[in-house]
Length: 262
Image (cartoon, one colour):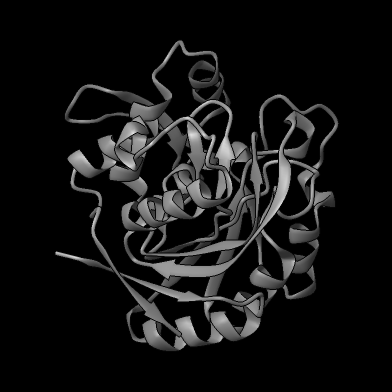
């Protein structure tokens, strides 16, 4: 079975969002959570582009909405309330949830992998994820699957980043609990070498906006885009990135996809 990936070779985020939400609007019922990437004080492409979030909130005006994320654990003095994304939510009267500040739950997967993560996503009926496609220092790439990392408790994030827990297994297992219903991935620009500028990330142009219900397929296609602009990047196949292979093996999504231009 091939997953559908909708794409545009454009930076017109508002038009792309309108087309994607028109396509999927009938399935969007009840409470909707928008999972942004607000990992630090850095602007796009480290964090979700404000135009993408604002276009989404405008299109979904009148729905029961919330936006959320939690920042990186190695930052001191960063107040998520000072972020542009938070201020957009304030302007449009949409609550922004810092997942660190709400109730956490600890669960074990059927494979006995223990995770502690926010209870918030499980209280929503529909999740829209807004990742940025980037190369990552510790888990090779960050995209649709890695964006779920923001749900995790600080302790789990630290343990995975210092290799006390397997980060690749953690990403895959987490997506069995909080898989997004729709992912809109921004690949207009990306970062190579690292996932944040403060860690050595370098901006590169890609020129794509992507959307799919299948986060695995998005990351497989995203791999091919990153490889074109970073041919010296170590992995030669998406299957060499453990959290992509693990997620595929767990049935979270598919490796084969059909590209649909919008």
